[in-house]
Amino acid sequence: MDDRIKEIIERSERIVFFGGAGVSTESNIPDFRSESGLYNAVSKYGKSPETMLSHSFFMHHMETFYDYYKNNLIYTEAQPNAAHIALAELEKQGKLTGVVTQNIDGLHQLAGSEKVFELHGSVLRNYCMDCGEFYDLDYIMDEENCENLIPKCRKCGGVVKPDVVLYEEMLDDDVVSGAIDAIRNADTMIVGGTSLVVYPAAGLINYFKGKDLILINKSHTQYDDRATLAIHDSIGKVLGK
Figure 1 (tube, rainbow, N blue to C red):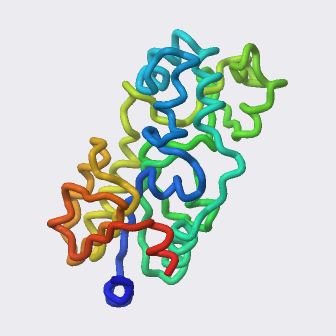
Figure 2: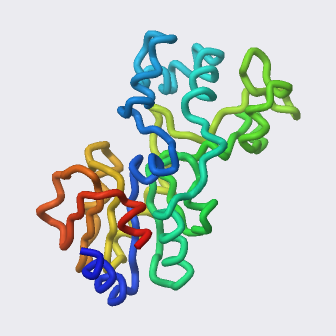
């Protein structure tokens, strides 16, 4: 299996990577449905993650939203794993033309990747809803900048919102367009750490018209039969080699 991946990568000129939560779990960031994931962190709130992380809940229950958000979606100690590092190296070699990710942790950039399309935004970027002033993660996590857990803009006093796509919100058109172009122009697509069931993101795979599709996921996906190579293993273990 490893030799086949190496062979495909060596003959490829425009590789695009599409990744999901499984890429981040290997950096000890739990996914929604894991034992320590968001679905098992609801007892305190009595509501589903889809409700807690919706635009309407954010607008009407900001204090509870930020309590949940800061305690369940922020992992400041997380570091890039072998998958992130391998992808950054492929970009440095001129092989990888883009990373399309459903994750919001910024670990691809921390590993050195520059061409990253973050479909669901990033916890590292935050903006004042009134004046648009930018703030980093440290700012919104600092209680001195918050009023009842809600981060406030130092310029105008407005609410600072994470640049994360909440439920009920649309994906960013420019990000989606960039991701589609990268996928459409790739000769090889590597999909890793995703079961390809969350739409519209999972539907992006249909834009790939290149030669080789490699799927790396611990469980089977509905696209396994379409793949040149389907590997059911850890994404970090496979790409790290």
